[in-house]
Image: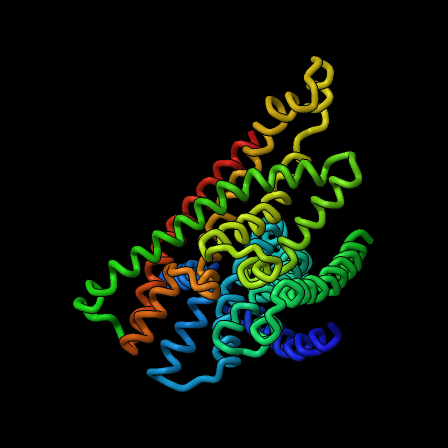
Length: 213
Length: 220
């Protein structure tokens, strides 16, 4: 049992690295994406919308295959980890852009009007007035997306990234004790999501308290 | 890079039959999973401690573990207890569990969103608990839950792609097989992607339309 645990634990750093890497890539790339999605230039807005829809319309496992087998075998060789990072980062960018958009939409229109009455420019309205409020709204959804993304990284096992699900798969083939092994793997994912959920609640409470003052 | 017309016409029957398996798994998972989700939601809201704990356990595991791990747990894990399932059955059980866990939260939230007066009124006119649920709470609750349930259905449709790992010949498996036979991975996978997108994107547009309408209904 403890040997099983250790064997599966070897996948933990990969799961964590993949989750955090894809999340930060997505959180960063999501910003220009949502800016394009809300742009006043129609073709740009349309392109961003199409991009987001296409990325979200195709299952993650297929994105990883397209990048790893499709591009990796014919255009440029890519390691499984980088392929998974690229694929999941792409998906995270589209989803984070939608989260940002929802948060921006939740800010009352009066905030924009008040800013323009104070003669703030478009940029400082965004960075000084709207974004700090939107950040607070986006935080809980971003945290639950982070947990979702963490579970999504399990698909990286299909292209051979040696993360938790991959280690579980190997171990179950080695020992023929699939029941315990996969129960353990599932438990690891659940345990991993607990600190994120807790941190999100703490951060949310802190930010809410700042507003309430 | 792009598949030629001859290739497409050679691959399409294979890909389409894979798509049909994906759709069958989706439909069955939803058909079993959503009523299961309703049961789980009622279980979580139940007064009996045992029911509550059991329902909470099923919900938390079904939501907390990745769908891929649930699939492999049922397909590779259960045979060690002597229960061997075909990949189609295993896929439906795992995804129905996943569906049940997620939809139970959706349904529970929408049942709790109904004003308390509705429940009190149902008691006042002498409806028992089952009738109150059936005639008063569910019709209102499901209307609130509908957009979220539809959005989740798209996710389950995409989730069927995970069944690749348990050797179910669905869309991704077919595309991968074509790729490994012809070494034309990119065009074959791209064709599968177009098929997925051609269902998910219109479905997503329908969902956002329903969301807007449901929103205006709530405001009225």
